[in-house]
Length: 564
Image (cartoon, rainbow, N blue to C red; front, top):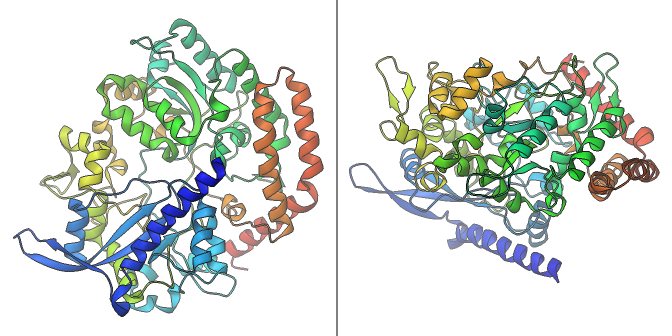
């Protein structure tokens, strides 16, 4: 019954999405239009496109100020819908079955299915007239994005840097810990997994509740659906490797290694088992859905967790909006399994060729859709997307430096304000890691070091001052240059059950979802671990099928980088 209700909710959500698309494609192919008001009060007609992103997100309000300002300047805007009530595969499957789509789609894990179904138009057939799109990537980068038939159907939106990387926020994975915990211990240096949990244990023992009497939670583990990376992939980080996601790549031999069966993996899961038995790990953690996880983090009760920063950003915004929770903000700590292991939690921006946004065959104005994306990459529009409106969302001094007042900073962290006033068009192509095109400012406030530090609350500033840093990124080791194969998760993300390696990859996921939570809560850890490994090796031909496929892809990428 629960599955039927979920499927029904998914179908209703997709019907709404397709209805939005159909609304934009009626009147014998005429594009849907709307009017927006200019600064002098005049109304201008603009095109209205539709988009669906197969990930959770926040919908902008009708009449969003920056969205209308952008529409006034480029003559178009986009109504955006996000994933609700179903998985990406379910949502995309319904679209493919009905053979009807919004104008733009980012299909997330359903991307290959969309391409295989012929749902996207070939962007490279049109891009000669749209230089901002064509020049968004280099020829070599576009070649890595091309499908097997040689065409480009999607534009990966993230990781593109203008000029040089200026990141202040570590948006990737880490062991996170609250500033109140670090402050309580006088800002210690934390280098290992044992030191991390020892600190949380001691803090919980001394501070079992928050000021209002609500019990503190030592550690949360998110393992809902595809987000189980929060549980299962820490071992390769603990061994000092960067986030290749699906495997470790030996730096000397360039061979893939299965991180799931290493000695470090066993030690890591044994530690989780011990902390669960001590009550440090939330007993509800292995049955908890994503929404409940975000809700718990938002209360400020949770001392620490492993996660990607983007994955818990909504909780961060909720914490920042509650002035009483300033000391509950999270900072990353770059821990490893043992002292002396060099950590690589932070990495440079990387191109993910497995996913991106495409224009669908249902779009009745392909040239208009191309123009819309092209115009979103104009310097003036990029500033509107990333900073907002001058004098409202930021100020500019006599040297051209962008700054914000405290009110502007608070607004930038208020989701209600964001929904009504700001429109970054986050899932459309953007230069999201470097400089603004003026060459003076960062691409946004999170890439402008001086403004970023000023935007922090006093608790974060005190923490950073204690560690001698100014940004979250500086809490971790400086990222080395990306290797030619990095990141391998862009390969594994595109695997399907149509190949032997894809079948193994899928079965690995099934086994880990089934057994790793049991390993963490087992009374007899060693017996549970042995049972997991036995089942894993019996059902997953990692050595004979998956690792050789990884090795082949690693070598292919090395060859491409070498121009072979």
